Length: 401
Ligand code: SF4
Ligand code: SF4
Image (cartoon, rainbow, N blue to C red):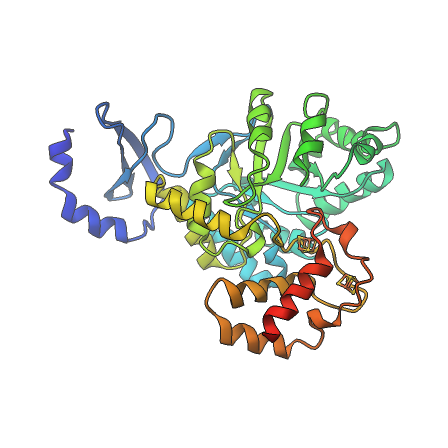
């Protein structure tokens, strides 16, 4: 097909591209113009031909949602996956709708954790009845000892209503000391290896927030995947991802929206997808609409324009390094302050132009930033070493200006 022939379809294309394909993909083929580097994808969806344009200027990306290999695990993952934190706020019925929508959108990777309260159970219920095999299932435990990890793997299997978990990860390993405890004779790794040998889990991975520490153990560790934060403003993992790829480790990206600090999710996902060293992004999703919105970025990928690159740089500069990712590790506060919510509301007040709404919300919170007695108990728990006390003072000052 010539480019001229394709252009004749322009009017039709704009109509088709504004609709959402409701049919399973039957076949697709990629047409690349050598002169411009543009890729066009022709997809057959039941009775209709879906014509998609992928404005990408290099090889290896195109078609429907991109499938990437998760390093030496060999797992073939679609590039947009599912993060299981926010589903805790949902219901089992909503979780079921979310899983169905993921199937519809061609997503195949689910990540959850023992620590996400009902997340494993909701996902397990939603997958029951024949949907389990359509997904690569990953979960994780913070256990450091053999006994605790062994028990946690069994609990995960039971919660997820399956006899096999594709990827089991050590959750939030913070230091070499913790790593060595996991790898010790009676450490958690022994239980993971046993579960792997008995066919209860398929592969073993690690999650961390500290790039320096993870880089330090990267070559000696026996894990097959790493999970690490990456987004418009948190780019400290870029060298880590590059080295991980060289070592044939799978790279899973968490916190793609910086824990809610980034409002433009589409821009952030597109930015992350530009990095050739990452395999799958796991934005948290608690609604069917959000599944569709995030999946669309993978299903109809558009590379960033120079204006968008500038927009990202401006945003990064405005955010600085000292911002809250809303991970909640600092909680509970001794005075009952919901610490991440204080920073979120401050963001609405100072960055997103929702001043009135943010002021009303802040005033209605029974225990707000002003209740901080500066005991400092929260600060060592923050993986980003944020000066929480000073930041809470700033929040209150902003709200009382
Ligand atoms: S320093 Fe303030 S925010 Fe942190 S635990 Fe103490 S009272 Fe809570
Ligand atoms: S202050 Fe630190 S620990 Fe608490 S939610 Fe924010 S980033 Fe997480």
